[in-house]
Image (cartoon, rainbow, N blue to C red):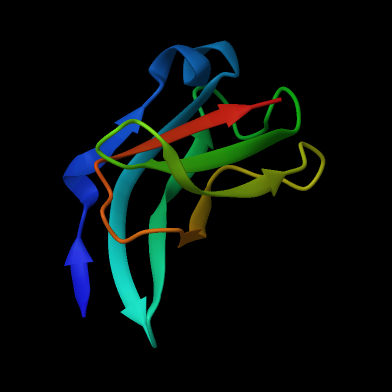
Length: 109
């Protein structure tokens, strides 16, 4: 069974600004498959100006429980030499427990 957790996504816009990228069209869905818990975070990443990244970046997705503990993490890497214009991302996070209170999504060097 899938549950829409898109409203739990928190962008760290200061980090997006610092790396000159923008995240959009974001969604997050929880799914239980055979007793294992997964979170799939999807969206688009693009430079704030132009069609190339100023540097290679990693996009991180971290899931937290109601006590603020990290219960899962996933990432995608974007090489500045291979990036052109816009990319659609799909980050799968394996969760320790099914109760997701918030999802942080942010780029880093």
